[in-house]
Image 1 (cartoon, rainbow, N blue to C red):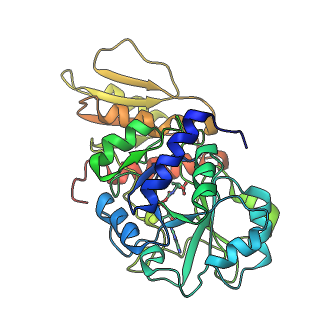
Image 2: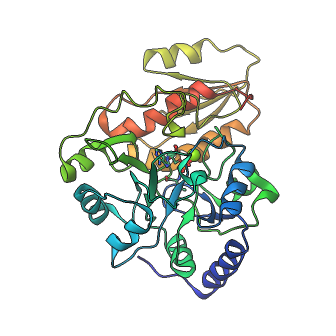
Length: 335
Ligand code: TXA
Ligand code: MG
């Protein structure tokens, strides 16, 4: 973990004071910015839901400091912790991985969404680590966006998204991973991936063995993972996801007076109707750039967005997952 400078340490101290007073703080992590509240203060956690416009049955992740004794840290929040949890924590924490474990009875229903489980993560970002170490307890933090919208990957995105609802945004620069953590559910019979992320299913399986089928989750009335709603991570502008020739055809079909935002790994044609964002050709840097690019296109006053779908390959799974959900929810102003 890299260290922080004096000015950053002062900002961290200010953030800690606000969190202890029950305020919300925008927290940089390596994945996306979180909207943090003291996890042991139910009134503060309740403010997260109000600020995001998020339904109360959606659980939030508790972020923990990097501890030398991780098992006693985990048992403050979780019970019946399986060996797979220790193994994944040892392999990937601090880092972009969230573990779902059976909860301790005293963990607030606001945090768990009334479920018998709790989501835990040790983020790697040096400012998040400094914040967590100083406050010495858990911070409840969902992504710092309005419910259903694009997750923020810079401090400015958080301010634009949430305005005065957040007392302070700790500026840790752009998030290096750029998409939300991989979520692994260890509360059932076999480990299951609930949300794909930078840490792949293959990397998880290499530590814990075969994974359970995740396609069956999310069919009940209450989603276990809010990111599992089909419409999520969405821009306000209508958005189409087109693969290969369909992308070429979609561009050929736009009207003479249309203004169209395009996300593509190909370079821009010389055509003033396009607001063109050329994306990196590899999955990890593409993910890092994705949300800022979608946000910029969404703010560019386009009639619609057309996204050139990346390949259907395992390495692109998390990016394709976010793009599919963004296209499903785009233009929907009802949530
Ligand atoms: O990378 C991340 O995970 C970011 C940063 C800020 O850490 N956080 C994040 O939080 O993406 P959020 O709330 O936007 O998404 C967390 C997901 C939600 O879909 C929530 O439903 C799920 O984790 N989750 C949290 N606790 C859970 C639980 N006990 N059981 C099942 N899903 C849970
Ligand atoms: Mg979120």
